[in-house]
Length: 340
Ligand SMILES: [Zn+2]
Image (cartoon, rainbow, N blue to C red; front, side, top):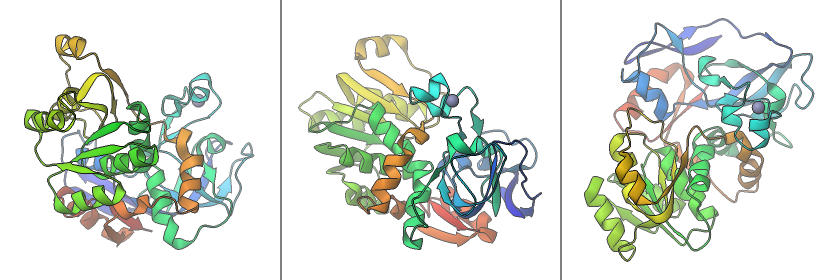
């Protein structure tokens, strides 16, 4: 089969890879209906994360089951399925508490690489959620978004304790931040303030429910959030970047007693204990347990209550994967959908 492989920073190619096969009786093989490039794929692409020789890429996926292992009972060949970027058994104590991304048997789908024609999905019973019927083609991008960016933005909103009537601020205008805006709206936030300097992203943030846009960042941005909230700060802040600046911007934008939901993959963030102590904010986040939210998100997509697929502003055939990365790296695209 053909699949994307990162050879070195800036060098991603569509190579011939081994066809996946059932390795464990709990595996399934899926034929990808669509896949995409994640903001987190740009960390190794930019050389910020070390690249250890040629590595397969991609961890977001929707597709049709081709084959299942002998122990798989809840999904079967021919079904359209969605899963998260962590495979999980969905039965251990951590999964049952709703933290499937930290399942005791968790496996990273990124190591398998779903920017490809086929993929082996471990722990298929726990990982995959099937749609009731073959979905309409127009809903496939939204279902693909549920695999990571929607589920991650949703967790950011849940971790930030978004609830009806609250004021929410969102740090980060990538796909996760934008879908954090959508999640905040769906969860009943009254006011949603999106930090963004890019016009196309501001428009999408407004379409997803942002009521205010703040173009300043860092402490200037924090000062504006304070101005907009009677000097208090927001009650809920979603952090969707993962840098020192964005994390401090999120904490400082939150009022005492408020909640920060941090879902940007942390890169060299160091928190000052004294400031954290006196901030009196709740911090919760980490790798989103997307599997927890999938049944609800799939239902909202199939009933067309939400349209998260509009974060994909570039669609390319899989053989143009290099251009898909380049467009996101140069911020010409918010998110690239790849068609195998
Ligand atoms: Zn588990």
